[in-house]
Length: 290
Image (cartoon, rainbow, N blue to C red; front, side, top):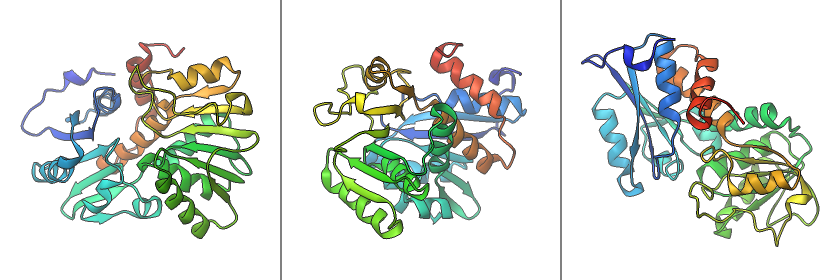
C-alpha cells in the first residue's frame, strides 16, 4: 500500500474532515488517509477543533470550500441535525448526524453510527442483543443513537443513565413510543445486566472519573462492557471491568465501521476495510492490538 504522502497534494485534491471538541484524540485521519492512498485517490482527511457555537459556520465553510464531506464527533451530532440542507433516512431514523455529504444538492446529513455500534458489539464482544438487558451510559448524540438502535434490535430491557436525567427521560419516552415491546427505564438495573455500554465522553481525559457509579451498579453484575472511547485504548471503566472479569471492548470497531460507511458515501467506492482496520490498530495500539 503506498503511503498517503506518495500522492502529492495539489489543486485537484479533495478534502474531508472530522469536526469535534476535543479532537486531538481522533484516529479518523489515519484511517481515511490510508484508505484514500490504497485506492489511489487524490483526497486528504484532516481533523478540526470546532467549538459548538461555531459549528454552523464551520459546516457552511466546508460546503463553500467544496469539501467532499465531513464527520462529526462529540459534541456535534445532535446539533447538526438542524444545520444541514437535507437528512438521509438514516439521520431521520436515529435522530443524529455524524456524516455529511456535500454535493450539488447542498449538505446532506447521514448517520453511520447506528449500524456500526451493533456490528462492533457482535464482532468484538459476541453479544446477542435480542433479549439482552443493557445499561446505557449517556444520552448525547451517540447515546441517543445507541439507545434507539438497541431498541430496534429487540433488547429485552434498556436502562438509561445520564448526568442530566431529563435527557434520558426524553429518549425513554421516544423508545416507548417507537418500540413498545422494549422495556425501558431511567436509572440503574436492580439486578444483573448482560451489557454495559458507555456512550459518554468520560474517559477521554486521564483525570476523568469513571462514567459508571459502582455504588449504584457493580461491574460484577454484568458479563460485558463496551466503551465507545478508543483513545486511551483502555479507559478506567474498561480497566476496572477487566479486573472484574468482564469481557471488554473499546470503540475501535465502531469507529472502523462508521468510517467505512462514510468513506463509501463520499467516494462511491467500496471501503478497503482491512486497510482501514490496520491503520487504526497502528495508530491506536502502535502496531499490535493488546
